[in-house]
Image 1 (cartoon, rainbow, N blue to C red):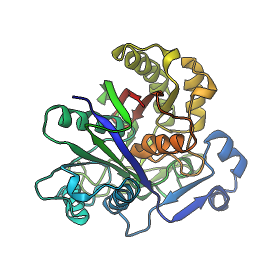
Image 2: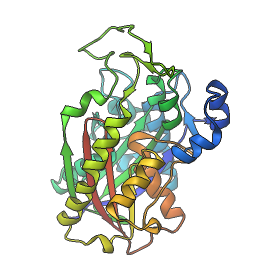
Image 3: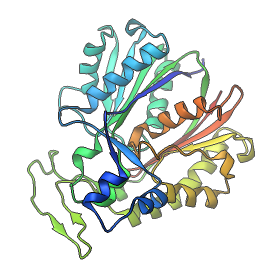
Image 4: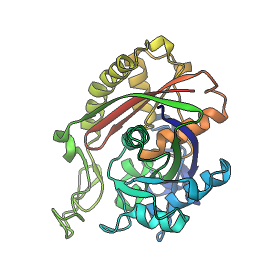
Length: 333
């Protein structure tokens, strides 16, 4: 039995934060600097009362409409998010009810960031291979904007909010092949929100600013950019090699590489280090930013629309980041 992607759709919040608006708060930066280094011109930001579950529901409704899918066809819901509505109940249960998916369906959340889509494909494939489900609705949804301090210009320029919905079934347009997965929890402190969970339930109120005016706080998203960059450069080339080996395919036989859209500088560095021709490497972040677990499904959707992925194409997808966590697979169209 094989597992396939049968449909992808995505949702973006209405508010669009442009670089022009952003630099009003940070005049030491320029529109050109943000666009050239980060590769982001604008990003969508969820409203105050809009949650990851809300966005996931909107993405799923688009999937149902765009791909003629009925809610009663879904027999398992998987939500990847690090910004759930509640500690409990599981947001996927709330989503099942809102979408009118049968009560006979399974539903669960899992907490992963930038590798989450590929991990979700692995979970969905296992459910289908095990005969547990026939149609798995994989939702990736994140509102990192709610974690970012309003003076944190580095993270504000990078991240945008979004949700994607992917249908995985025993038939479809892209076969999901073999996976390479990895974890290194030693890097956990390098991309973290330290408070709000049960380890540190109350705010620590330890906000401080460095000499350049950059904030650091246990109560907001913290990212050590240098350490994340070093981790990525060490891990991702090995991930690509291992993914190719797992699928018995050469790098030259991959038609398109779709990586997690972290930022343009990092992706260009990786592309050159791995030796991937620019025409085989896909970018889609300028209009949406780094949307965490949704970057890869959104990129696949747009690459298909642009005819960069066609029938017969083989693409390698790779997610990597917070955790540390990384994952790759090959999709055969």
